[in-house]
Structures are given as structure tokens and as C-alpha cells.
Image 1: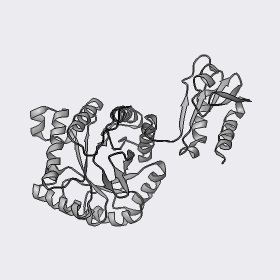
Image 2: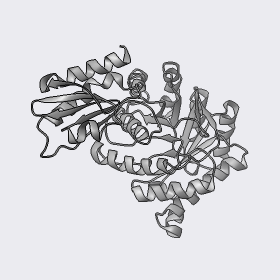
Image 3: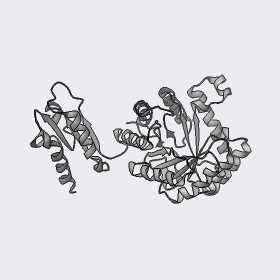
Length: 352
């Protein structure tokens, strides 16, 4: 993997972003922010799934005022998503948020932007400059079309507003629903700034297609050393966003945790591998924080040999299977006992 680009470090609540700090996982609630109880409940469900930063929509002053009680009830940084009204941003700051997401170009005059910056400066609250392909001005579209150059130039204009006010606590995002456009935009932006970058493919789609688009877009950039925080945007329960984000990080060895590998099945498979793999995945959920690789393989060809690097694994045969550890066969057991024996072996190893 390419060396990660060294970016400026900012502090978002109790989370450090940029530099050599871990890439953090962000999500956004889909509740009505004015409903404090439901919003807090959803955030508390997201935290054990792996969410480390949460963003909420702030469409009006009632939602801005609800932030105070939400903030008091959660343990991760809270970001207010602001559009059009600078007064909502100032109210959000007063009510204790840890960060703002805004587009300085759509909250009125530069004077209004400066008011927000001054309020943020008092508490050193980071601001995320968010420019999407769909939010480009008509002027930029006329000049460049919907291109990486236009998106990045728009973002840099917004960045310059904060820099002229001598405020540097910011991170930037330049998302698009097109994966190639997203990748091109972040690559170009990364060459021009050293602020932390927040990665995502916006409006990526439903759970299946959105997971693929997000994995390719975010994964490509991370593999090139670009990115400091990520949010997977899919039309699904926010918990699914967080789980996909975790898998992206784990697949690139940017995050430790349980990895399950399994073969795709073929004509050599003589056990019900698909059912077994799903059941293993389900039963291993309590082990998700352990740095383990577990293999579920359909036959001895793909078993201890190809999966020898796995900490533990199953290799199927007709009506039975092998349990192995780092390529070494431990035991041969009947198919109907394979899963339980695998779990028991892992528990013994972990001493739990």
C-alpha cells in the first residue's frame, strides 16, 4: 500500500483526525433531530457497530436547540449538518456540537460566513467544507462542466474564505455519485491541500450497489494513501453504512478485527458450504474485535493449503470436514459438528 499522505491534525471532540491518527468511521442519523429520544437511541445503536463520529441534520432552530440534549446523551463527537442559514450554525455551536458540516457558498453573504467562523473559533470547532458534484454553481458548470477541476476549484474557493479569516481547523470533502469523478476529485484536491480529507461516494445507491460503489471509490483512494475519515452513503439502515466502512478498512489492513475468508464453491464442493459460511459469520459476530482470520473452504484443495495463513479454518469433504490452524490439521469432524467445533476451538485459543 502507498504511504498515507501526512495531513494537518485537527481535533473533533475526543477524536484526532489527520496525520498518523487512525482513519475514523462516520455515519449520519436518519431520524428527525428534533426527536431527541429517537436520535439518541439510534446513535447509541451505531456506536457498538463501530461508528466513531455522528452527523445530524439541522433543518431549523428547533433541531439546533435539540443538539444540546443530544450531545449530553452520547459519547462520540457530534457534527451539525447546516445548509442555507448561518444562524443555525451559530446556534449549533452554542448548543455544544463538536463540528460543523457546511458549504460556505450557500449560507449567504461572506459576512455571515465570518460570523460562523468567529463562533467556531471560540471553541476551536472544526468545519467540514463539503462540495458535491450536484452542488456546483452554474458559473462553475459553464466554465468546466461537472468535472473534478470544477469541484476542486469550488472547494478551494470556500477554503480560502476560512484561510483569509485565519481559521485553519477544517477538513474537506469533494464527493460525487460517479465513482470515477469522486476518485479524480479527491486525487486532485489531495495534491493541492494538506487539510484532512473526508471520503465518500455521495448518493451511492441501495445497499447492494451502494456498497460496491463505496468500496471501489473509498477503497481506491485509501489504497493510494488519501483520506482521513470515511462515510459510506447507502440507502439503508445507518448501521449497514458503518459495517461496510469497517470492512473496507479491514480489507486494506487499515483496521484490525475479525476477517472471514471463504471460497466461492465449485464442482469439488461436497458440503453445504454456503449455509456453513453464513452460519460461521453469524456465530463469529461476538468475536468481531479480535484480530483473527477465519477461513471457510469447500474442499481440501482450498483448505489447509491455500488458506494456510488463516488463524483457523474449515476444509470440507463429503459429509465431514477438517478443522485447521495456520495450515496445520487439528481434527476431522462430521459435517453437522463442524461449526460448533470450530467455535469451540477458537474459544479455547482465545481462552474465553
